[in-house]
Image (cartoon, rainbow, N blue to C red; front, side, top):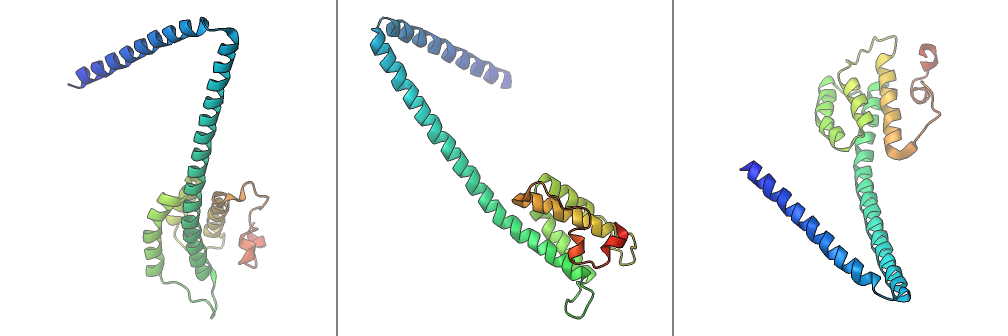
Length: 184
């Protein structure tokens, strides 16, 4: 059944190509019999129409891409801000910020992972995956988790359009970890 459908499709495409060639040949012969000034006018008119159609289609394609990017960007910003807020709560060991419980952190990871799959760039998804399976150890003196968090934050910044950055290791962490320079 599949082979016969495939054969019929191939036959239809072959017949259509032959028909196009025959019609094209007839039109070409008729075109060559026309006077040269008329040929030039027809070529100019066809070129003008082709350029107009290509321009319109290109602009529509660009507009659709921009609308899609704009829609995704708003979703990304909301998701990424939630991530930043959670980690600032985790790092904020004072009376002003209430630290999240382990259950809150687990729920956050469970709820946000599908959103990362939908909205995150490949790099952000990979960094999120690494951070997600790294246990948060409050006694970690190497700040391994923090540096993984910083890598995620840099990937997020790139995903939001900040491009090539001259931010070095520790520059983002320095914004909320006072003694980070000891561990770089």
